[in-house]
Length: 282
Image 1 (tube, rainbow, N blue to C red):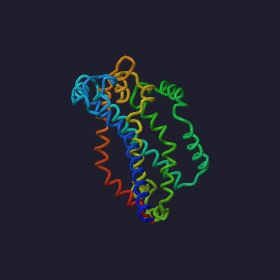
Image 2 (cartoon, one colour; image 1 turned 120 degrees about the horizontal axis):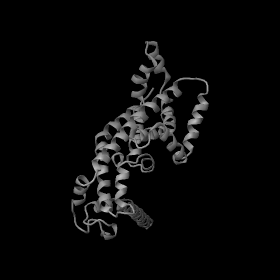
Image 3 (cartoon, rainbow, N blue to C red; image 1 turned 90 degrees about the horizontal axis):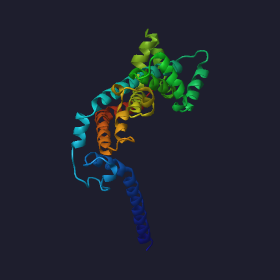
Image 4 (cartoon, one colour; image 1 turned 90 degrees about the vertical axis):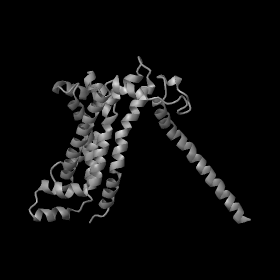
């Protein structure tokens, strides 16, 4: 009798847990499915869309409009250039800075580290006026390199701390052995430190790339001309006060995700392998 009661209670608990998971999954996935269905639904306004995904049928007219009657590829190119340069410069500067803080002792080392931490405490939009004035004086407004400069400067403080913390776990005996063999600091950094810290460097590159990809605030402040617009600015023009083209916006948002899906599928094995190898350190 006790065993039967325990079985009933266990089944009831599993049912409640599964029900909770189903409800949570519905609220998480429904907006995503709805955006996908909206990109293939006829019409433009969000008010005309069926609440049931794909309930209005399927059409490809929004993608045709996106690629033939807008500057979508120009927005894509500008965003790709900004994201690639931001990721590249962030990885180089943050990893070099982290190597210096991790491996060398010098005057004001702790003060500089604390300064980096304090800089990261303040939200980026607090300094928007100062950023605008600086870019205005150096000729960086309405330029892609000016926006890259903003992103890289904002990425350095926290990422330097993050990479430094990882580099601190790498045994210094590796550096000493290489230095005995006559290796320079740059050679040690390039041939020893970077391969060992590949997981955190890979993570840093990915986050630095995805950060600017759909950022809206800073491109809106820095970029002015239509030829310099990014994907966020271009897609926002579909759902502004003067337009209500939600389905075109949804189609553009769906296309944006394709490079990330391809990148994840191509790199997930190498990333997992590098993380597993990094766990085996001296």
